[in-house]
Image (cartoon, rainbow, N blue to C red; front, side, top):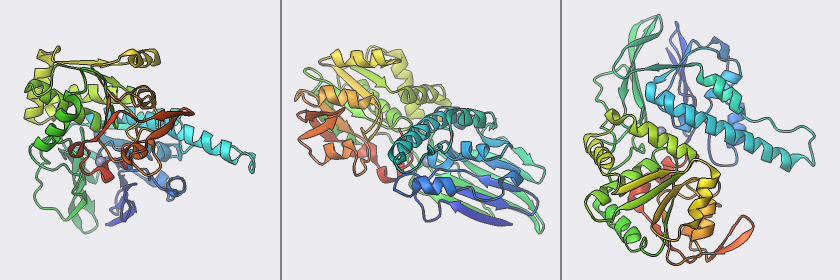
Length: 416
Ligand SMILES: [Zn+2]
């Protein structure tokens, strides 16, 4: 049996392992390289092997650094099944289409900037139709249910507690020297107390491949984080708004539940929360449709939210007009929007309107990379440029530590 690490080893992103058992040939994950100048080139040259001879693909979870090159794999000629949990398949529909959209935009941008020297436009890594085609290759499987992706391979998904739908893959593979037990952890959650249950415990294995031990499972906010949120939000809403830039999948839901918990215990007044990001809305709806996958305290909290809609009024803004209407609200609104690093998406509009007002607050909940608008805010810029306007920064800026735990890892693979 041979394992080749095509990405991931020594890399922060781009997890992809080729397994050759002598009988079957398959991939575990097919992640995208993200961040840094070389990412584009690395993604273009990844998957440089005979992928038509692959029998199947298995996926540990939906994060882009584990799934982001699947549409490219399919576009390059892989037509076989991609096995993932049911919830991962649901999340992929949101994330891969969004990723394809970003790829198209990046290719467009690169084409514009190279036009002077080259005639040919850059082709995207993959397009939205290619991502859609790849989704048709998904074979969803339930947790704790053995399936056979190949006559010589059986596999069971166990809950990894990392993000919704994440799986530890427990496999038995036939090799020339007998049957071997192979376990892939993907990213793992961190144990009890969080939004998702602790990872399933696995007994012995012939080979155990652990991705990392610091996954970004959604934490119940610590006492310190709760205190920071109360300080930042409590005094603000009477006179201004609270704007929270947030990654759509994982972080937005962690923020939402942290706020709900504070409203339930009365430490914050009844809240009006707007989620203004189509991807965050979809990810939140998928999360709330799978309460069975959350930890028991989070399930209780969600049930409380449903029973007490006036305590946390949750609204999603569907179109751009709804989003722009938020700009008319002078006080009392909590606006959660993407992108998490403030450099794209609807969040820029909310910052443009709320940053100049000292009655407002901006809460930073995640890692802000060099060169992003979010980073300039964290670094204390007095004015920032948004849509070609110089915007004065007078709003109160708060960095909420507990919600950005493991941020360097998290945010590398949370695109929006
Ligand atoms: Zn992950």
